[in-house]
Image (cartoon, rainbow, N blue to C red; front, side, top):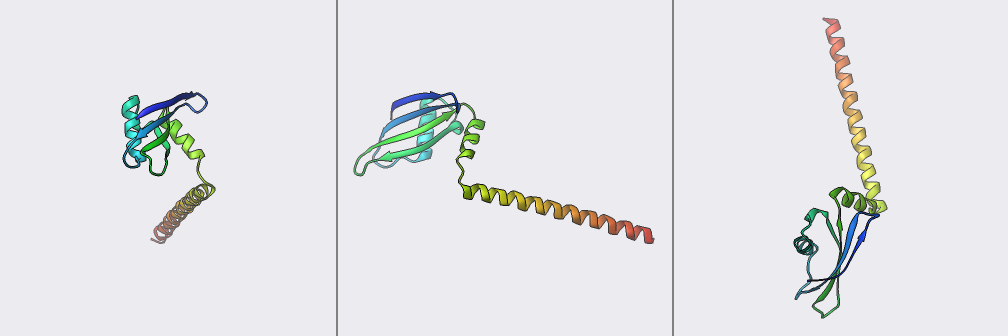
Length: 122
């Protein structure tokens, strides 16, 4: 594993790296994340490997990754890259949760009113 390029992106709070890796089979994203964390002595949770490219019949691979300054930076940037379908699904889940919460509150109010009526009868 050989570091080809390294640059600092202050706007996004990350370090961008490109490695050349020689391997008999394709390296996995999680394996590369571990190797980069070991080599650069960074926390594995702040590393995002986004590209592993190789040529057919070749044992050489180009791995591109970003090492963020914090876990929060990584989470915020990855949330920006969501597809329209993913954002719509999340919005529907939030809406469904609100409806269930309102329904539960309504049932609780209804139960308390019934209890008051029963108590008033006695």
